[in-house]
Image (cartoon, rainbow, N blue to C red; front, side, top):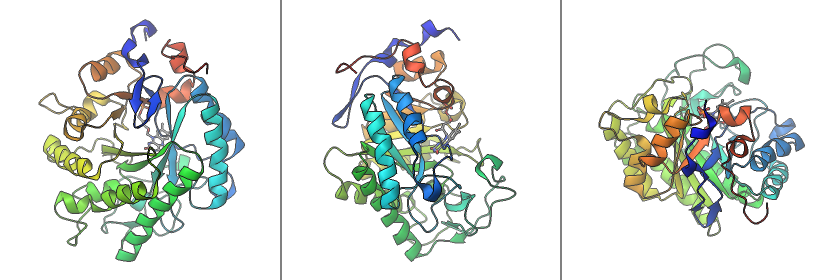
Length: 349
Ligand SMILES: Cc1cc2nc3c(=O)[nH]c(=O)nc-3n(C[C@H](O)[C@H](O)[C@H](O)COP(=O)(O)O)c2cc1C
């Protein structure tokens, strides 16, 4: 890769809610499954996340963090935001990142049918997930058949996200990202063949989106002004990487109309498969990210293979997104922005 070709636009600072990003580079959420006993973040995690801020990333989105003690946990050794001890563990992480001048957002995640940790999983409907569990996360063999979530399950999961966001705020996070992507529970609600419900949580898009909207509304009602509430969306799933919405851009528009009504601070469009062009572009030349900006008017984070200079340039120059989230490239080199010369010094940090 010719490092000189990475677009200079990625070095441009921008406003983000009422915060300020020192460049357009974010660390994508990445599960590391190395929390301490009881899902408590460790000192090693504080050092790990601080390295990205020191390396010049403006924004760090944490690994998916579980939100309740019932059915949300995806992996063993996954950190949570469910107990005061977990909250205090995260405080060490946020302090370390802020000391290096970065912003940090907690990704809140409910595994739904894709839990590799629980013997009983819940989902919108009783549908066997395709694929097999991932050995690196401690899973083995097919996913268990999930139970259809009840009204009580829905109350517990919605309250769990809202409570986890309160803990995130107490832990010093700049905000939270509601994970409705990659095949996990909130994405299962949006996905036609995984949500067969006939009640007010199935059928038309407003119903499928209802729980996500309630979570965003609940988080915002309980948070102080300025606390960031993001939403991550994707078409592909971790267990079905090539999946695309059956109605393509038309369905993306339907989802985004609901996002606009819910009013998060930003939208994050992910291509977990790692090929943004293949996974996010539609036949008419629009992308999920560009539609997100057009329909919601919100800042858009895009993700998936954006360490490639040509793709990053196409995204930034053609209005497909405002902020580039890097996954594996950041993992390989936490000092990537500095080494690319994309790190703007601010406030002497
Ligand atoms: C080790 C690893 C763990 C991941 N864990 C998460 C996660 O917890 N939450 C999430 O939304 N995405 C997760 N992802 C997906 C990344 O956020 C991203 O979508 C993917 O790596 C593609 O981006 P890239 O091409 O820049 O790597 C993970 C990816 C990797 C490589």
